[in-house]
Image (cartoon, rainbow over all chains, first blue to last red; front, side):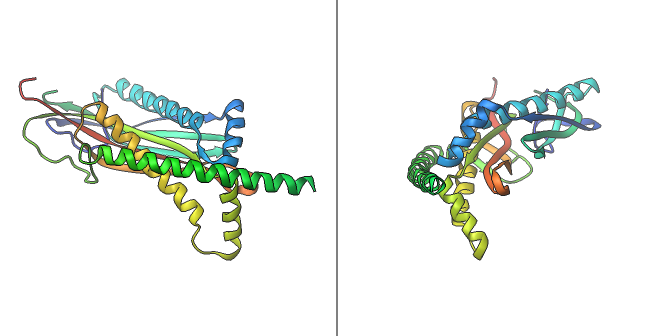
Length: 107
Length: 153
């Protein structure tokens, strides 16, 4: 499956439009990582644990979006956007959405 | 009294380590930017440039979470009283953006891409400390990497 944040893909033609697909996940932070984050709040610097956590969650959201696109018979998701919001104290929602399409053309 | 000692210690630790970490981070950002200059072009346009020959596209992302130190957070707290530019946060946001873009470019480079089009940036604050002050921010940079495919391949 082709996932892209472009609206058109070079060398391909969009033959069918299947509508919006989305995937999201809500993650809470981890106590161990929280302690490290507390320390980093004093010293400053990158919170590696959080970077990883958010990256993993974003991959999860993308995978869910892809599953949805698969289910409706798309072979590509275009114009993908990411969005992050905090839903509660210490929990964040990672959201990915895009347009499912059927592409035709040489790969 | 113990509170005061704790506060002063935290301020000194934050100032010392924070300045050191920021300088080190900026140095690394500058070096990597120099290395990547001209290798992976960043293009803001929403549409890929029309090029003859085959090309492959791939979504690339780069993200980073950075936190401000205790000293700078205190300074920013003072700023809230008087208003004006919050310089201590400006450098935080700047560092985070450049780092995220660099990581995305490095990922694109690994894939053999020569350009990234439709670059988008997203910033969000993920950790709110006491008194609702912003503790750390996440920056995500994403775009479509264009990998040229040699004719006949």
